[in-house]
Length: 126
Image (tube, one colour):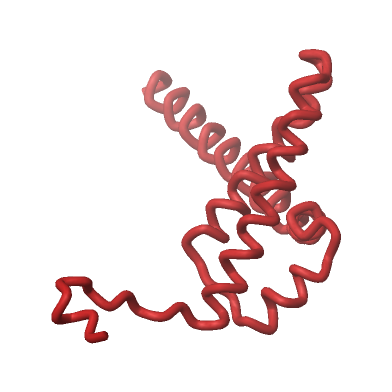
């Protein structure tokens, strides 16, 4: 039966990588939902203690929704019992440079303020 003659547009076939990425996203999404349910059962203070982790895990999901990894990579992560948590742990481990960037930004801004304050004092003394 010719699908074009019946007015049904032929849908493009998903590649193996696309199917695996979709399966991985669904598995990670379910993992995040379980984490969310657990988190909501905690005290407000405990929830605040986990806001960074929750938000970062949401960002990982967002990335997985719009980025595609190779079929081989998706298979490797699908084999893990908790791929979202594993990716989060890896990201958190790499975060050292992020904290260094923040520290540098603090020092740079403080130095700029020192310079500005010195200029202000100098202009008042004139």
